[in-house]
Amino acid sequence: MSRFTQYPHRSLRRFAVVVAMVAFALFASAANATTLPVGPGGGVCTYSTIQAAINAATSGDSITIADAGTNYSEKLTVSNKSLSFSSCSCNHQVCLYDNTHNLLTNVTISGAGGANAPVLKIVTTNANNPVTVNLDRVTIQDGHSGSTDGGGISFSGVGALNLTRTNVTGNTANYGAGINFKANGGAATLTINHDTFITYNVAATSGGGIRVEGAGATLTANAANTWIAYNQALGGLGGGLEIINAAIANVGSAGYLFGGVIYENSASKGGGIALSDGLLNLYTTDPLRPVAIDNNTAYANGGGIYIDPATDHDVSLCAENYRITNNIAQQGSALYALAPSKNISLDHVNFDSCDQLASLGSVPCAAGQQCSVIQGNIAENAAVAPPSATDGAAIDIEGTAFFNADRLNLRDNTGGYAVKLNAGSGFLRAEFDNCLIADNSASHELISSTNGDVALAISNCTLAHNGIGGSRVITAENILSLNYNIIEQGGALPALAFSGNAADLDNQFNIAGNTSGMASTPYNIQTSPTFIDAAHGDYRLFYGYRGGALVRSAGLDYAPPFTGDPVDDHDLRNAPRDQTVANPLFGHRDLGAYEMQGVGDRIFISTYGDDILLVQ
Image (cartoon, rainbow, N blue to C red):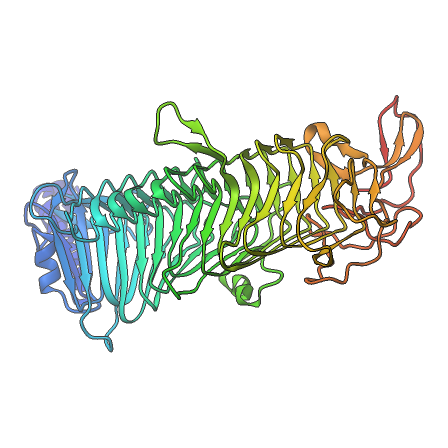
C-alpha cells in the first residue's frame, strides 16, 4: 500500500499547503512587480475599490481589476502617475491574470449616479513629467459631466493615453462626451488600438465621440476593429470626432465589421468629423478594407467632414485611398469647407505638406477595391420628418482655400450639384485631375464655380451619365482650365457656360457630346466615346472587336503628354499615362480618367458575339 493510499487526508493536506505556498509566491512576485489587484470580497484582491489602488500606486504600477460580473461604480482621478489598468478573472477570490486575455472579459467602470464628473480623469500638472496611462479590456460607461468636458475620459496635460480592447460608451458631457483629450504644456498622444470602440456618446455641444484639442495633441487610430460610431453632438460640431486648437488626428483604421471607422455619427455640423484648427490625415492601412467615413448625418453642413477654421488659423485635410460614402447634410453632404482653409487634398499629388501619409502607414488599396471614392452622399434636410431634398453639393468649398482632388471617383451622389465652389470675397483654387464624375444626380449644374476669384482646373477627367437638371454641365465665372477631358452627357446639354474674360479660359483636347461654350479649336471635338460597359459603371475606353468589327473609342491616343500644373503621369487607377494602343491622333495620351493599357498579342477565336478587348 502506498503512502498516499495509507494516509490520504495527510497527503491531500500537504498538497494543499504546497498549492497555497505556490499561489502565495506567485502573488508575492506580482506584488513585487508592482501589480495592485482590485476585486470584491477581499482575499488576495487587496483593494476593494479602484481609486484606493490608484491612491496606493506609484508611477509605473499596474492595476488589475477583477471582473466579478458587476460594475464598479466609481469616478476615478489619476494625477501625475503612469498607470496601466486591465481586466482579470476572479476565481475563488484569486485574481488570475491571463496575459493572452483569451478567456477574459472587459471590466466595467460605471459613472452612473453621483456627481457630475468624468468616469476617468487624468491630469498632469508638470510639463516635464509626462505620464502614460494604458487601458486594456476596460469598459468606461454612463459617465456624465454636466456642463464640463469629458463624460467618459478626460485627459489634460502631457504624456500618452493608450486604449486597447476598450469600450467608451453611453457617456454624456458638454464637450468630448466619450473622450475629451487636451494637450496642455507639451506633447500628448491618444492611441486607439485594436478592438476599441467609442460608441453611443452624446455631447450637448461638440465632440460626441472624441474631442482632440491643443498644440501637441495627436490622435492615432490605425488598428483593426476600431470604431467611432453612433455618437452625437447635438448642438455643435463633430458627431464622431472634433479636432481643434492645432491638434492632429491620424485616421487609418479599416473600421469594424459593420462599417467604416467613422460610422453613423450625427451633429449639427460635421456629422462624422469636424476640423476647426489643425490637421486631419485620412488614409488606408489595410489594402482590402479602405478607411471610410460612412453613413454620418449633419443636420446643417458637412455630413462626412466639416471644415471651419478659426480666424487666421490654418487647417489641412490630407487624404488618400479613402472612402466618404452615404453621408447626409443640407450642404456638403460629403465635404463642406469654409474659409480660410490652408490645404484640402484628396490625394496629395500637389501638396508637399501631405507627404507625411507614407510615414503614417498609408498603403494603396488592393486591386478591385474602390478607393478615393465619394459615393452615395445625399443633400437633404434630415432635421425634418420626412427628410426633404436640398440643393446642396456633395463637395462644397466656400471662401479662400487650396483644394486638390487627384484620382477622385465621385459617383452616385444626389443633390443640387456634385461640386460647388464659391470664393466669396476670397481666392479659391481648385484642381481636379484624373477623376471620374459619373452617375450623380444634380438638380442644377454638375459643377458650379461662381462668385469671387475662383481658379478651377479640370484635367484628364471623365464626366459621364449624370442626371443634370441645369442648362449646362459646368458653370464657371472667373478662371477655368479644361483640358484632356471627356464630357459625355448627350448632345442636347452644353458642356460649358463660361462668363469670365476670354483670356482666362484655357481649354483644348476635350471631347463632348455638345461642345457649346468651349473654345473653337481643332482639338475640341463634338463626339461621343465608346465605353467598355457604361451600364455597369465601367467608363474605360473601348478598343477591340464588338460584333465582329474593330471598334476604337474616340479619345484613345488623342493628345500629347500633359505639361500643366500639376504634372501627373498616372490615371485614376494609378496606371501609367501616355501608352500607345492605336494610331495616335495628336499624341499618345488618352482623354478622360483612364489610360488604356495594351494587352499584347491575342489569338482571335469565335466568342459567339462577345467583345474582344485589345486593352485593359
